[in-house]
Amino acid sequence: MSEPSQRRRYDRGVLLGPKRNEPLALWEVERYGRDSFGDADYVRVYGLRPREWYGRGVRLLGRTVVECTRDRLAAEISRDVAAVACEAAAGGTVVVDPFVGSGNTLLWLTRRLEPRAAVGFELDNAVAELTQRNVALLDLPIEVRHEPYERGIREIRIDDDELIVVFIAPPWGDALTANGELDLRRTTPPMAAVVDRVAAAFDSRRLLLAVQLYERVEPASLTDIVDGCDWSSRELYAIDPPGRNHGLLLATLRWSP
Image (cartoon, rainbow, N blue to C red; front, side, top):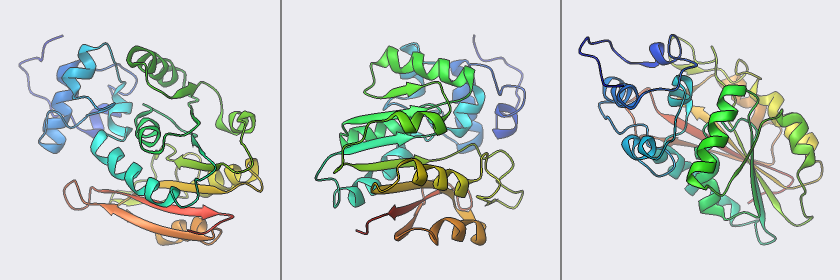
């Protein structure tokens, strides 16, 4: 489908509204990048520009385009995760993504960490189906399972000396307030609840948690997570206009770097 002549701003509101559950045409992906960030190639995923991944048959839903961790951000996140993980990964690594979405962050973590296994879980039918299809088309070295992460993580085999790296980015829903502050208590599910569930499932194992943040985070909701960890560090990636940047909380359980 070619881009229509009538101009409508393709922003977060459109892609999380009327286009939420639709696979986007290439022009829609590029227009979202231009309208929202001044860059038609903004939605780079799997190491490919939109025209490249679209040309190879990859398709993304409107909400996935908005919510996915694009290549530039995923590269920064994976670099910082690897810098901490290398201190404790002598026995090998397993990477888990409870809310895998497009699978792009899981892919970048896999390329950087070279884990024994990289497994992502996706509950939504449409997202899971498209992501599994995209992974197969590009022959990516990750596994995407269509099942609740609460059940799936208990089935992952972990060796005694392996480090488990968990990237946690549940859907934000209305957790991002009108003034641009992310409340981790209002993600779906709440971020601290996910951390607790993961910690219980991998009882006695060493965990490195990588929690995706926004530039501004409601302080108490961040404290809910940090207070239960052995060590933590917060990163901010200033690669978008001020007030629209993402960040990362790195935290460990049962070990300290």
